[in-house]
Image (cartoon, rainbow, N blue to C red; front, side, top):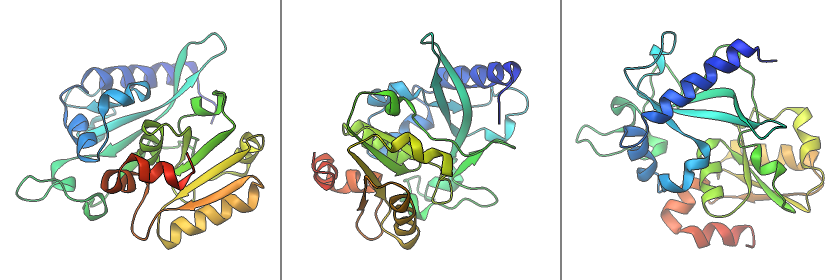
Amino acid sequence: MRLTEERKKLLMEVAVQARKQFEGSPAEEYLVHRGLVPDQLDKFRLGYVDDSAPRGFDKYRGTMCVPYLRRGATGNWSVAALRFRCIRDECVRNPDGSFRDSKDEVHVGHGKMQSMASDTPRIYNTEAIVRSSDVIAICEGEADTWTAEMCGIPAVGIQGVNGWKDYFTELFIGYRTVFVLSDGDEAGRGFAQHVAKLLPNALEVPMAPGMDVNRTHKDMGREALLSKVGM
């Protein structure tokens, strides 16, 4: 979907407002729970949607705002899309206030990640594609992308196992190696196999059963993740 100037302005305004609410918010606390260091994720400009959300965004209150950033020819940033990660207490915390494991979260009537109506799947963190590197990783989702990047692995994210579009393929042809970092489950294996069929330079790198990139880093540490890609 081609963005109108009006929509670009709206997305930027929401992203900027959410970013202002991030420090000290439940979103920042949630990232720490996931083993991530918020200060090392500044470039993603993550935000938090609180009660000051503009009209039309009320349903996203209590979520982490995840902007899909794009850098223009002049170096200016724009926002191509916004997604929202639910971190509401009733969904991500136990009755005693402790965080549930991500796989045990309970999201009723909505998904963990929510896209705006009529939005189309996009590649997350396209800045990694224009960076000078002969390797890149493809992750399932935004959290795994944050994790890989925090560990020093250039990475992009795809919106779930069904988020790959055929026109994505040509963006990755020129790399020496494309690591497909997949979840350790049947859907993850299917995703990796699908991408590997399209990219002759792809290397499937599955996580252990029941694990994803973020959980691997949280439970086993940075070196464990780097060793999987030989870095």
